[in-house]
Image (tube, rainbow over all chains, first blue to last red; front, side):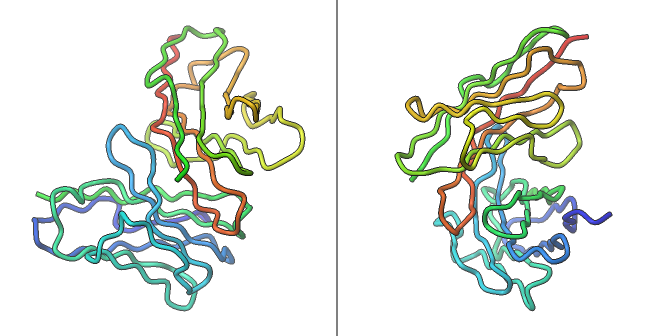
Length: 113
Length: 114
């Protein structure tokens, strides 16, 4: 499968714990985006990378959230000291350039108890 | 900041009925427009997109959308739906800049009865 992959697909954690998600974009895609989706809503932009550079972060991304894309390949999204409000589907997408189609991964569903 | 409004949260149709899903956005500048579909248990995938040119855009599986700039709208249409079109549909917009980040509507769930 040469699409966008995300790991894990599901994560259940207790409030206060740290979690890390991984996204592997389509090979050679320079752009990588993170979105968050809660029930009944569309995806909301969190942050994006051009190669290894993180170019923009949404104000939704509090200081408990950090994202990296070392070497411009896979990306990780870490949430520290999770809160129940962090429960959501975290989506990753990649594209060749800004104007090309964004291909979405299956998402990581996070449940914070 | 731009916003996207999808008027119908849930639409129920019988097979062969015609479909039109509304999408309006709020931004006065140049935008790129998209419709995505998410079939049950699958990833979001692109149905069609508009960047420039002919405002009537044709996508996969017989879908089309019309960009009406004066109405800030990008409605999705299909003349005859099938049971397999049952899915959630999202309209999205991004500014015609180098960012590429998209703003999504809250989605419309389409149920097609066989």
